[in-house]
Image 1 (cartoon, one colour):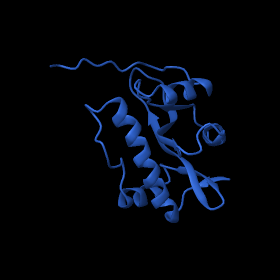
Image 2 (cartoon, helix red, strand yellow):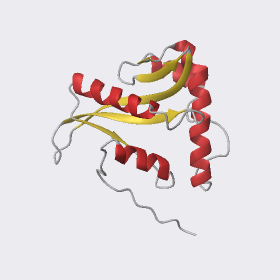
Image 3 (tube, helix red, strand yellow):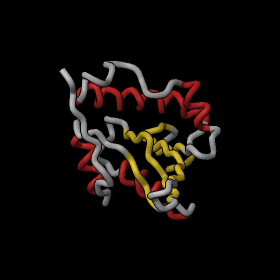
Image 4 (cartoon, one colour):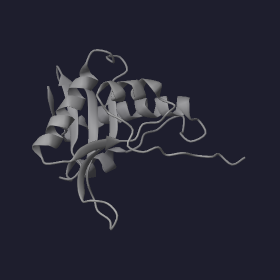
Length: 154
């Protein structure tokens, strides 16, 4: 079952956030710490009450097996058309159940949420050092919107 996250899901989300950091640290130890998480429990509680930052969780038998954290963005500038975007801030399926279609179900849920709520697009950032995520997002029909390049100065 997929639903909006609630306070009792925070500990499970924190556990999954640690898994995300492990992947990022393995790919880019020059940027990511070896342990920790992007958001702590207090920050997650604040996100849960924000109507512009929905978190969706995949729950099976009372256990959270995955989540998608989203942010509603509205971009407008003199050069760009006004666009309502649903940005995927973070996405994780528990490492013990990957490959079972949970990520696909979560992604489809987000896609339907975006469509039902008048969003123009769904966007996210994926690290090139995470080829599994890159393959997954491409299999979901995502295409590069732009490329962020870097030069590491020694």
